[in-house]
Amino acid sequence: MSSLRLTFLGTSAAAPTAHRNLSGLFVKREGQSFLFDCGEGTQRQMIRFGTGFALDAVFFTHFHADHYLGIIGFLRTLGMLGRTEPLALVGPRTAATFLPKVIRLGADDAPLPVTIAEAEPGDVVFRGDGYRIEAFATDHRIASIGYALIEDPRPGRFDPAAARAAGVPEGPLFGRLQRGEVVRLPGGRTIAPHEVMGPPRHGRRIVISGDTRPCEGTIRAAEGADVLVHEATFGDLEQARARETRHATAREAAIVARDAGAQKLVLTHLSTRYDRDPDILLGQAREELGERTPVMVAEDGDGIDLPLRD
Image (cartoon, rainbow, N blue to C red):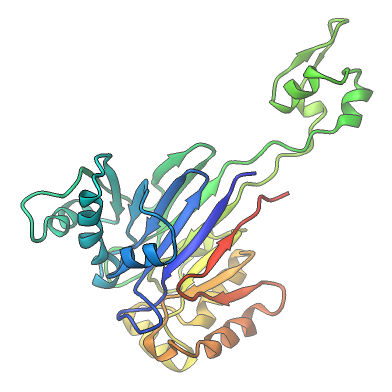
């Protein structure tokens, strides 16, 4: 079974509080790990919540300070720990000119090798074994993107009864069919996997919005997603402020999840006014989603394990 886990390192917007750090989301799939945004203090949260520092890439949704300042100290820590493997840094337009200045702040050279790449909506920014990470368009005040981790479809379930009915003897040939191989029976007849396998099963999909107004790009990326992690900076009473600052309310995030058919909505990036009591945001989101779609407000340290789809 392929493990997939999200750990919320920071869930506050703009400024940290005593209970919430700035934006940071750690995603681990099997032996590979990724960080989405790196607000001030993120490395301390990684220690606190036990994620470890063995990252394959850091993905920035945009370059407002509460989403990137933590990378300065984090890279220096990695350097002191002796990391020599390059770390991939990916962000929206301006990453190639902006990030080199950031990572050299206070030093002549970067403390370890890094690669920097700019991503446009639709780009595959990382490809792993059986999955990929894609960028999608969002709507914020500056250049911004969201990210979707998308697994490849998995083969359907093997049907032993169908295999026996087709004349396949139990044993190694069963295994070869399950691995997608065409097998030849003793009499010369061939059996293809699709004859004894069920329909392909969907892979998992995680969608991370970053800071954004509700937009078509997020809806398309989140179609049928297992989890949509969407910012919910404001509540209903701050609707005008949300439009002005190009953020979303909890209700708007829920509408995005509903329109996309997402299986679960996680609200994050909360204004400090909701630091200790986010129930009002949760209630407004539930008014849109009803009981059919689970919704939660992320707290620092929350973890979500996603089982494989059957």
